[in-house]
Length: 113
Length: 115
Image (tube, rainbow over all chains, first blue to last red; front, top):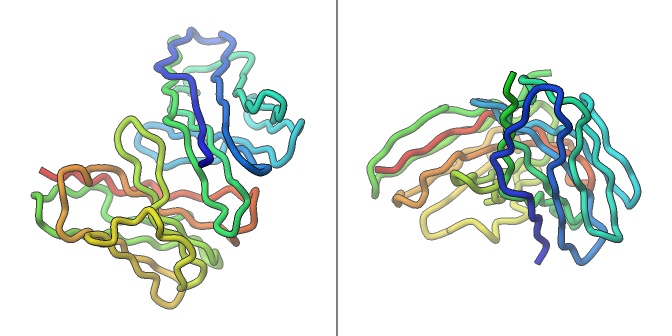
């Protein structure tokens, strides 16, 4: 079945460092891809999404490009801030009747001042 | 707009007891989801409603879990009897429809601890 694999954390960076969180997927069809973020004590928030190959999703300085040839959707940010510390989840939706989201295991990002 | 409301925020129960969680989705959102998030794992779909009908409950342990969505608005998820492995955060989410590519809006979740 469909699945999502994320790099394991925690990822610890200094403020203003470059961030990459790897995400690859397995899907039989043409899924939509998402990044969700979960700040401490809060629910999941949609960070960005891409619905077809070569689309780039972006929000709050974060970017991810839907790469069909490598089945990847890596999250990047050029300069992280302490406030970016959170758990990041990659997810896919297979676009079936249910639009079910399948999540990766999450990557904890800790940004130090 | 108001977000997805869930209650309670925290619940501690003993194994074999029963527990219920409540969710109020965003007004007008026809699709409602319950996810289970075990510590260290990504959320897993338990059940999806479209209005007040069940669309997908294939991952719901029906011997102990039940859910309903009366009048297509609020929803309740129940566990009876609870097991230790049910300790998790239970997330409710809603969306306007089940069209592919639409993100969900999640509530803050209910953290359940079974002792």
